[in-house]
Image (tube, rainbow, N blue to C red; front, top):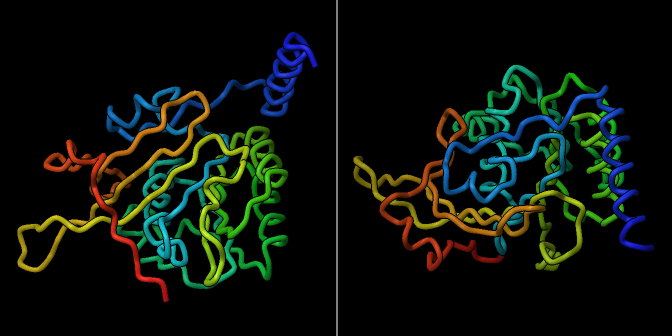
Length: 253
């Protein structure tokens, strides 16, 4: 296909997506409120009405606790009066932990699937409901075709979708290298906490990596974990060491 025809096809897809959204343009991006992060993202923030992937690191992918906390902070600020559909296979979502990152438990609608085929179906169906703020799916695998379907569904409805990748015990690492139609890919890893005012207690720190961003710039930042308003903050004392920070990797069991 010639470059001209490719451009025409891309323009046609954009027009069709615009018609499907009732003539509305792309919704404004959701800023993190941290200039160093927002400047790496086109539009100055996380694209709404799009698919985003979130990974953990190493064996921590089994629980995906840091990734869930990262998403909770985003969802706390994304259409805060609307519910969130969270699709999962294991009934181990820790609502109090999400609340600490700003996501109120009463906003959650949980859909438990028996397998990933059902889970992907639930995500697609959820993206047809314009009353939702977002759709989250805990996925071990995300084939390229499935990611394209989710991306198109999110674009058409203007609802943001998140694939939280959970690696089950015994599964292979390296899923972040697989092709995907997601607009962004993030990796969130726990780092040694910084001591606070109380003895023995430390503030949670994350190494937040933007692995890939369509039209953006891959980067990494050392941040304090989401606060109760859903915001992350650069770890000022460690900001200049973000490139060399060593994340904490849970021991494989």
